[in-house]
Length: 487
Ligand code: MCA
Ligand code: AMP
Image (cartoon, rainbow, N blue to C red):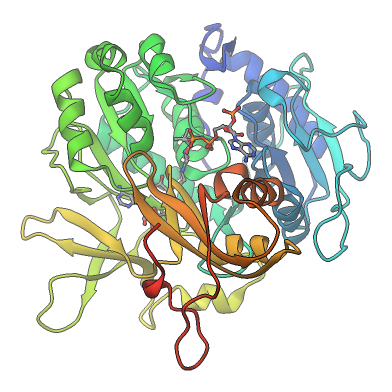
């Protein structure tokens, strides 16, 4: 039989009452395992299960329950509007949606109204009149207990289907296997000297690799305590008193803007940044205020985390370190150039996009290396530097990956919008902010921002809208984003 994915849950000393804290509620590993066992018993045999990924103990329980039962998990952003949510549910064919309680942390537009076993969560119809995806909502009850005795699922089986944006069209479901998760977490534990002695603190969303795979499963595999702060605020990080902290660069920027909170992190062992480039000034301010040179690591939904600086190694502003154990990298540079596309192989890579063989094939080179779409350079000492992205149509805002095409399509669904072009403009706090250029009549900036926030996840909304008489186009009629006026 294969080794358990969540090693620490199988260990006997599970009665520490604060092993897991999410947004102020704590439980022991024993309690988590019992409640997750009850979830596993309810969903066993389902081909796939969606989880409304609020920052709650219920979400962690739902994910652990599905992993025990070997049912692939599709996390659904809790603030996603009908267009995004219905796409995820339909594309993944999830017929069950595990949800938490209807408390403050769980408030959202898609709270199922029918309670246990209600079919067809209500909500406005998706554009195009398809109507809400039919799904049975299953509430997670932390008071339920069951001992799960099923066998450990095959390591090759899918653990997660993670929806992630491309340059055009709707998000695709990346298939992440259990063995990829295990390989990545073990490589990170080695690079960061991450052990059961640590207390991990973060407040990142539980529907992406950073917050969910590293931030929850990492703690459950290494056995470290986990404090999820609900929201990733500087004050909450300071109060949590952890040894190991995760954040996206926007979070670290906000920590440096709150010097008292930053100083409180001096007692930590390691501060880790990832999901977007950490600006050199933020690196330096963090060092000045906390005494720590942050570890920076690089990854993608499709590859998990592949490069990092190390707990026992050098950390340099602007560099994401060296390949993790088992990962090989190369830079496909034109002759004479030092920079080019970063390509990867290794045990942490995904198993393709659900139902999209052409997109899967297109993400690999002919000789089988994954094409990241990021432009990088490798120094003679092996340190990697991410220079930028090959396509300006993939935006990183606050650490979230957002496809320009998805936001453009949402804008074009508004009856007043005739043309739309979306870009990521440099932004001190968010890295990039979404700016929309539209040709439209009789609609305000605020209305369009709210319209996108209502259709997609809230973080995909433009922060600014510029109204133009026409989009700049080339002789073929293709929009020329480079010719758009400054934001
Ligand atoms: C504002 N709000 C609105 C509107 N405007 N709601 C509806 N309609 C509107 N028009 C509300 C929001 O609901 C929210 O409410 C509040 O305003 C602020 O939301 P937002 O603007 O999103 O917050 P922010 O301050 O800009 O967020 C910064 C952040 C966030 C907290 C750093 O960007 C974040 O959590 N980023 C993490 C992304 C991440 O984990 N990426 C990892 C991808 P309320 O406050 O009540 O909720 S994985 C990856 O990249 C790879 C694998 C890797 O390497 O890790
Ligand atoms: P996502 O699929 O949301 O996981 O986003 C992956 C993308 O985030 C990568 O392709 C990079 O463009 C970016 N990214 C992640 N970590 C870093 C980092 N440390 N430095 C620069 N870019 C990063």
